[in-house]
Amino acid sequence: MDRKQHIAIFTTASLPWMTGTAVNPLFRAAYLGKDGERKVTLVIPWLSLKDQKLVYPNNTTFGSPSEQESFIRQWLEERTAFISGFAIRFYPGKFAVDKRSILPVGDISEIIPDEEADIAVLEEPEHLTWFHHGKRWKTKFRLVIGIIHTNYLEYVKREKNGQFQAFLLKYVNSWVVSIYCHKVIVREKKLKNRGRAGREKKAEFPCLHVIRLSAATQYYPRSIICNVHGVNPKFLEIGKERFEQQHSSNHQAFTKGAYYIGKMIWNKGYGELLQLLNNHQKELAGLEIDLYGNGEDSDQVKEAANKLKLTVRVHPGRDHADPLFHDYKVFLNPSTTDVVCTTTAEALAMGKIVVCANHPSNDFFKQFPNCRIYDDDNGFVEATCKALSEEPVPLTDAQRYELSWEAATERFLKVSELNQVFATEREKNSSKEFASVSLNLWKSMEDTSAYFHHLALGFETTRRAFGAIPGSLQPDEEQRKELGLATSSKHSL
Image (cartoon, rainbow, N blue to C red; front, top):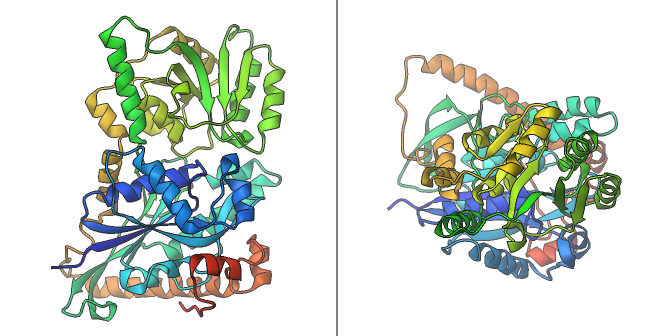
């Protein structure tokens, strides 16, 4: 029997940080490994105690990777009705305060042994490879698929000299994604020798292996737009219970008005929301709204909210599945920096009305009757007032399924073609010789570009110039010891 296909999912964050790149890859690993047909490994960052205190909420810290893994698995099992057999491995990471992000340290591709290096899924491939120095991903793995999560250009534009920074970042992102994510699928014939040397290349074909969650992300050549995320099953259960409660008695399903939940930084929708509320206090007179979140801008958000004549209450962040949120009827989310907002999907799953901007990040949600889209300030006011005066439309079974991780996994397998990667061989076509020359020329240029990136990122001074964290070329001894890594290694393309 053929050995199982191995999928390694690398991501840029981990629980208990409740961010999309921690939660969504975790569910992806669980659902891809659910049927046992594939061997799945989730590869997540391990932070030093100092960085854990900066990143994880409620002073949560872990003394070892195994302790954090237990926390993650318990969190997942409480939200799914099954136990998935996927593995969890950790790579060394450091928290960059200026970027508000976790960045990899050293060559994280080494976490997966060569004999298991079939398919790599890079959640945020640009983020994972900006400062990569080590074995080239496309050499290590047979297939590398990137999933674009974050609208980095939009965030950067809001900073000092933002337009210039965004211009540079656009080309850096395109560069690293092109050299580290496959632009072609290599259809391979398995020989008797199952090792890497025993694979015979048959043909190369252009293929789409960069997945953009929505058109709100930066454009990449040969990419495809597809929302390959679902919602935590708990939210679908909550929505179903509310629907049954509403129709089994005269009990009102939603007794509270409007709210918003998200990381409390201006760029996560709080700036847009408070500006809209400030500009239309007269038209929205009587509106009460609760804001929930933790973040670096919490104090400023509270200060701005207190200046409004409207009743705007600011609370610490909580899990969106908390019973506290079940009674709210309207979720207001004017953010335009999201790619596909997880909390919007969760609110729809719970049967709430969602008011959001007419923006590419919300295209997926337009198919649901409880999604109310607005084009301008007046549209926001009208949609908000209307939502508060109406009752949500119950979701159909088909609509619930569309929000689920089962549907998201089907979409992922379809657009990534994982089911066909090793199962099919292409026929040689009449233009093979010309195609081979063209592809070889492209490969030579790409190899040169990859070598330049590898060389430049091998020096501390160059890394600092590019924006890397000092001392991130190799893990320190403490991280090596905690993760059981070798003391040193040499890298090659």
